[in-house]
Length: 153
Image (cartoon, rainbow, N blue to C red):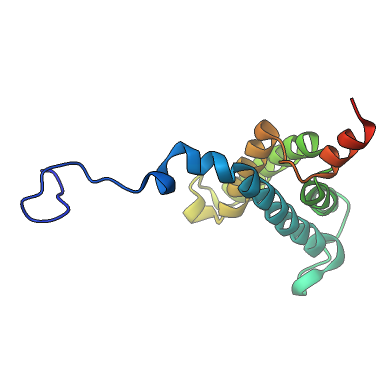
């Protein structure tokens, strides 16, 4: 049974061209990619700061392995991603770290692969956001882009 916009209406439901068209997405792609990179990098950096420096009432976590390594990757990796420095390389490494964190620290400890059971939503989201950044690049407003422009052709 089809959903109709109003009684007796049988045609397709349409939206303004500018809102849902590919042109709208193309117009704002770079802006949203830069925003995603910066926000995800800063939030990731905070997780590292919690582990390394005891920010926001957590930690600092004891020992170098595994939390010290995770803290270093998250703090400095998040900073690099937010700034757009070595963006693709760092995004690939920290996506891997988040995959390891999900399966090692969340799924195995909770005995469940389901994120609603093992509380692993954040690592999954960070992993896939960073895989997206690895595949897409960091956008136009990065230290990488600034250095490339400075170097010239």
